Length: 289
Image 1 (cartoon, one colour):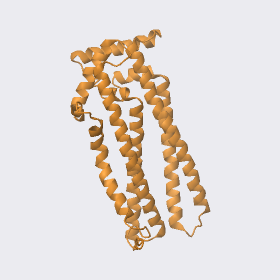
Image 2 (cartoon, one colour; image 1 turned 90 degrees about the vertical axis):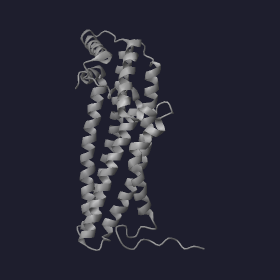
Image 3 (spheres, rainbow, N blue to C red; image 1 turned 90 degrees about the horizontal axis):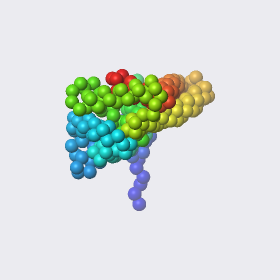
Image 4 (cartoon, rainbow, N blue to C red; image 1 turned 120 degrees about the vertical axis):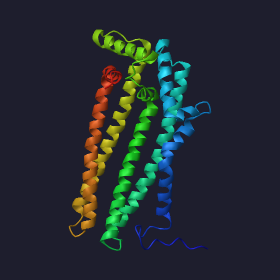
């Protein structure tokens, strides 16, 4: 009968059993580039491999937008539907990979935090290195979480996400003429209150859904951050002054989560405001704002 893996006795992760830290670090090292490369591969269905090239994707979006606008039908034209489906799969794949990365980074951050609180370093330099590593991992975890949220938003409304790629500043060709028509229709709809044409009505609705999705997610995250901050501050108050390292970690985490909750709450309110006047938001976008 084999004996259990002995805990690590020294280094950054003292007290952590086996090869857990090394495994988590290896997973993070694999998932970081995977977030950038793999989504295009998973989204492609053979005929869409060229969409991995951003220039080709942008050109295709412009061409298909012109066709879709001229169709005067809420239903996507075949070409536009093909691109939107690709973009939906891309966002789903990227959100899933980024979520896995976030989980790995959070677990790694927890191990670093425990190591810091134990004071397991060989001296001030080692403790400072552990603290710096914790900060780096925390920042990366926050960034990967932002990627998750952004790609869920894109999956909810992939058409609006694609529209962000439109070169709205172009002044030549069929796309320029189509963009002028969109701007004029948006202005007419705003001035007269008349019902927009089918394609524009779909665009307004999808843009609203795009911003509502982010507003809802941001509101949920803000509430969770407030709750976490409250827990951290209660633990801070219960920790005796003698335990300076624990108080420092709790206090810093409490300030960070409270500050982030305010930022995320502003994001939620801003997106809810845009969703409530989606036509105006579209007008600002198509006019280069």
